[in-house]
Image 1 (cartoon, rainbow, N blue to C red):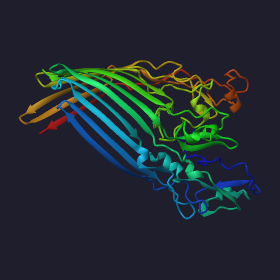
Image 2 (image 1 turned 90 degrees about the vertical axis):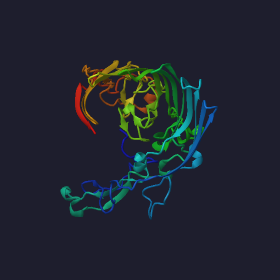
Image 3 (image 1 turned 135 degrees about the vertical axis):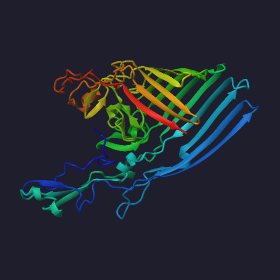
Image 4 (image 1 turned 180 degrees about the vertical axis):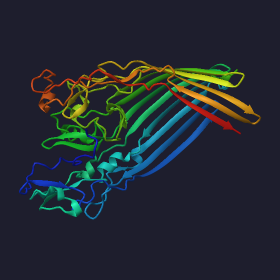
Length: 488
């Protein structure tokens, strides 16, 4: 699992060199006077400036236009600058790199707020998260020392600063190269979004709303495993599908022997319709339905492909060339793990004359995609048949109940309430075990590229996972919370 700081960030790890050995071999030490502290030792920070201009115009009291422009300047330095390491800015975005226009309008069609049409458009830039910066830009120290092992007294090594033997070499396993492995043409992560909708008053206390939303990922930032000719896999902080991650024949560094790194893709479409009866005559109610579609090969800063792992800019999406391709070398592109095409919600509340209020919320939603996974070349997220080939988890529905009784004493009141979550105690499975293979399949890169193999191929070591297809992660059982509120 590629979750720790990159081994030799930006270049291949040094190995297979004989530096010598003692009578009984050699040993490794870290955290002593020779290596200094090992691990996360840094004063992490970034520097950001933002300028935002906005104005609003109203025409004839009915049409309002809002326009704005945001620009940001952002840099992250190296955290190990010192006498032997020059100061640098591995990430350095200028104002021109992060120009974010915003445009929105509201049209009161009849001038009496009974029918409104609205819409918006904008570009949104992410602020670099410091999780990967701390790990890759010098915040993670991993200088190891190697000594000859000349006697059997291994249990005394490191005690009171005792490191016997001859120092053979030191090696920085968090090594740095070429501006800390950052693509010099790195673009900031950004998303384009537009929305359109209308709201109309059907009755005095009843309104209906329709809304369309689309979100498009323009660029993502990830640590991308680039297979370089004659070197092997090298990790770069880059935009997948751009710059260093492209084939050498397209101006990048990727070996054309392997499929080229695809662009990070995350597309979201949603259509929402809602009815809302505002509180009047002691009751309120509402209904909403959303049809949506979330597809692509990149689920965001928290990876749903890794069941909620939150390692911004350092997820598994593009670590290995085959992460993004299925068994037939077709790009994996489909419903992401949090995709729920249908979502409906009903809610209502009623206040009785003697001070008791009761209410409920009922939600019904589609299940999430289930994709068969094989463990290949240490990749435990590989989807040989693409996304969602095993269907979806069961439809999920749940009901929450609320009640409150209020006693009034002049200007003061005392209220008692109860919240009941999952009142019908449903226990729907929210996940299905997707792993068909129990251990890593013994495949070569050549076999993966050939596509001429399957689980029955001799010598690949296929062991079925007995839990494959089992349901788990059941919805939490009924829970009750009691409360009291005194107002004066």
